[in-house]
Image (cartoon, rainbow, N blue to C red; front, side, top):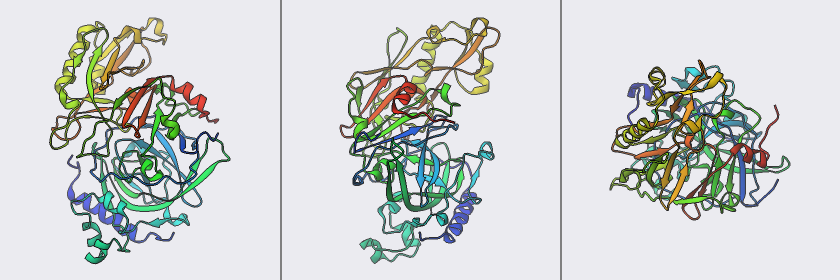
Length: 483
């Protein structure tokens, strides 16, 4: 996707960051021994673009213990806490299964985000400073992660520009620092920074358990465009957090809280990494992960049909479960995309079926204000907030391997505000996929994954679904935080 700002602006950003980087210091309830437990807070995010890189696995640190982090709510995504450096600094970042790079804002005063006015006064935006950590190191050109983050046609290019000789490049012995990178996202966001290594401290589900993971590699980002908060990449590439922790041979699971908990600081939803995530899943339905050789680092699932209420299932286009010769097509499951996106003609067909079934009056002024395509005025006697989902048809997604997921209540139509005049306006929170022949044909977003246990069983190359009350699951995991 082309950048919404000029090449000149981009170059100035890159140059400024590179000059700044030159001045940075270069020094510097235990359940299962193979599992990690974290927490997730809830907010809203958007679709991130693909980056092509070689898939790779790393060895799991020995003696890895369960891990749990206290988290706070912010908007625009599901957050996890990273404890980086010596002494550890807590940085909250989005969990994103649609990208690989983990990055954090760097610099106490120097971090700059263009077109991020809504976040100017956000006090939750803590930053990381390499000079304040005794264990911080700049990654080198000898590192394969340096080549991966640049993802150029010729992986030698960035380090050659940095002054590495051909001999050291071929031998993998160049000692020069890895050059600054620019990493782009599908919604138009760009981050510019340097690869840094530092100690990642993981906390167990019991406060007495901690483990230090040395030389964890992440982006130290000084300038961004529309990306105000860092990201933890959970894709399948070598840069991703699960890969660096050695868990891509196993998997992870999450259970996203519903929007009604978005402002509740006392509870977060469980994220589990390792053996515990893929064990005891007898009640889940599993659909196979699709293999895309052109984009191997993303989680593709095959969508077969969608059912509205008791109506006949709408067959989806084959592009949602197949790839062309260039790797385009398929549906990715992505925690970094808020709403599920469907290809235009099929999405229009789905809207038509909903309109033929729902008889309540349209709220067209709300459609114009929000950009959502279907909004209705639903009866709400005496303006008393109750469950109105029985007044609207259910929506079921049918995936490969005969997996059917009935979207939990509130995962399709959502109230846009408080009731008024004995009605409440609810809008369909599905969206039309951008009209493009490149990239995935659809995205299964995080809003439709609320109150669903989602298991990424990477050992068996499958993804499982089980509707459940994620707040109760969080309570059972002990992920409730006192204010």
